[in-house]
Length: 419
Image 1 (cartoon, rainbow, N blue to C red):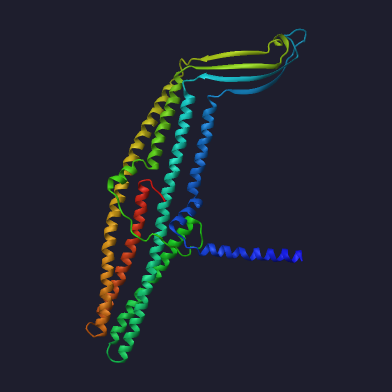
Image 2 (image 1 turned 60 degrees about the horizontal axis):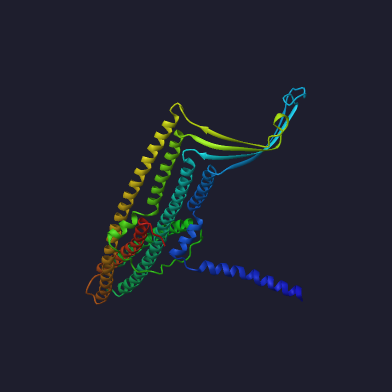
């Protein structure tokens, strides 16, 4: 009985697994969900995470320059001696603990520590910027896929309307109220819509594959946008101020600080170095057998190095100036990108509002044209033209609507904001 119960439970759990996976697959994908999947999938973000760990390793290396060092040395010396005195021993073993403490080296250890901290902040800012740029890629792919799918719906609606139109024309032709040329015109427009359908299906497949590549989720099922309303804008200067402190600007500033610390390290070669070394002996023979410890204060004053120190300092000073210029350029470019993104979104919002009115107008025009045709007030060419205008207006509105969403997230990324 117990064995049957175990088998029943195992089969129940086994059959439950595919159901859970199927439920996960049918959950509609949102922009937030796609972005979270892309963050986990992106190799670029993973590389930035490894760079942060690399800077942590350099910080430990810089910190070790200011800390004492301890080691244990075991020496065995053999020589051709008679062994009659302490100076002619055949075997001279020595065991000792060695302690070394740097006292002064031109503050280069402290500069290295500060530089490694600045580099870590730089890498963190670069990763934040990479995440923001990834959001732009994901939003572009997400809204492009939504646009293509809505284009498909619009074309399929037009296709169905044309089929209905052709059926009506065939009936009217049999009654002698329509000419064969009217049917041919409608069929020609139908074939044109079918060609557009094939093109949009191809574009939908391409955009879907791009979103699958970014998110690692395949296949991409239904996607939804919970917030279908168009975004609102603040003042332009609000975005420009935010752009001045976005992550890549902060990363460039930290890179400038790293270069300044490297200059301090290079200038430390002009300073003397002072260190303290102490030995504690656990085994000695010969004349030094009674000496258990000693201390050595070492001072090294550089007098002439053949121009190496001067050349290194000049090189580091030039790099620091270059880093400062790159920081200033990055800041100015960030302001320019924010202003351009603001203007683009402002224009897209105005265009979308105008296209929405145009779409409503063409929809009303097509409905009236159909009614007038049934009353024999207009001809078939007028109806087909109204249908073509309706299709173009709807597709233009769809494109402008999703393009506005894409430009909105580009503006958010241009000022250093994300989801």
